[in-house]
Length: 72
Image (cartoon, rainbow, N blue to C red; front, side, top):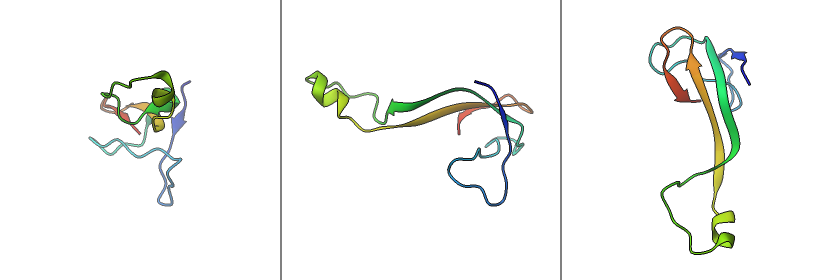
């Protein structure tokens, strides 16, 4: 998935932040998932505990201006 997203003054959590390095808003998402483990360094004792672990969204984006890659 690749799309250009723009930041607005009334941005919500669903919109892309500008690049944290240069502030440009030419940002392209190249990888995303809805259910990434929130704490990725834990080892679980059984599959049920692992499946019950909290998850969150990851959306990796690349700035078209400076090349910075970040989780938007």
